Image 1 (cartoon, rainbow, N blue to C red):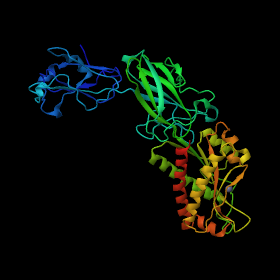
Image 2 (image 1 turned 135 degrees about the horizontal axis):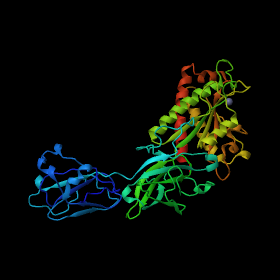
Image 3 (image 1 turned 135 degrees about the vertical axis):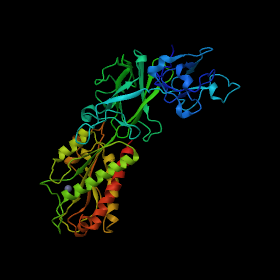
Image 4 (image 1 turned 90 degrees about the vertical axis):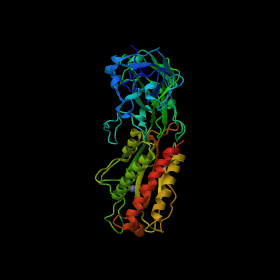
Length: 484
Ligand SMILES: [Zn+2]
């Protein structure tokens, strides 16, 4: 008794065939990538053949595997077709023997569709968390398509690594065989390289480690770039994959199964961008108050702008098919967070960007314009990165105000020792500084015209808010995309 085996050792789950008297021509349709050589014997189907209407494709008989005992070897001889592992022959026929004189009649053609179960990631750990730190239902399964299946950052301040553990189904027939793991920058992706260094992590310097969630599976380090595991009796194996935690790092993970001639592309994954948006002030701290309209409070404007920006960033990243975790330091006008804690939130979420939104005030009633605020040079570890983000967002914000009020003007950046911007609170050091952080001061609420321009009860206010959100979300996206 010989039944075709699927490439991963699973038995085929159905066979289709035409004709009761086929002799020498076999078509094999492989719907999935093979992971080991497949031998398809030349088969003769048993008792059901005589009842098959072979001229009507719609009545193809499906022989389920529990009926496979009815499959017997054909005559006059057993011919075997070998399809090499790694080949992907979807919808392509493979001819065994030269065509016969009566080609074209269904009686002399026999055809099998072999539907193979794929080697696949069946589960990932840990689950992805939402911005509030709660597990996202279903996130233990890989994504289909883009955004790619995400890595997660657990205690990024201490670990300086993104990771995920992968449980992979290969097939019981291959139990005991070794699997060698490698990864590469995702071909054709932007950015084209994996940014950052594994060596930045104090404890996760290798690309692969033993899984803790799914068992060690005989893990053995081959090199910094490669690991090896064993396929268990249940046909599964598992590993932990580490990637530098820089937003939009995209990788292709490959496995080479012992005895196979080629590695198999297992899964493509991405480190999502992480953005913390900080509406300045809050609750008892109103921030600036409109000089000529004291119902306008900085804390309310900052929150409204931040919530709009949050939504536009979600839309932008989704449209670009990149992963995003966006976190707000506060979501209501009655919340308040100490500024150091705001910076530490960025640190603990593994932020790429911390953007704080404020409105300005001055004793001089003529002062107006848009500026960004950054940390003083003496306190800085990544001044150039902060200035690039700040200048870009300041320019975009100014353009949004200018579009509704020609009196808007550029102001040079301001530098100081601001608690929300402290590199020490971000966990940024001279050698390792994953976070860019700046404040944008949209306009002066102490300037009468500027106040009328930006206040949300006026039409111009809503227009500026919308343009700010749409265009700054693009700045944020591009900043992560272009981070070297
Ligand atoms: Zn402020």
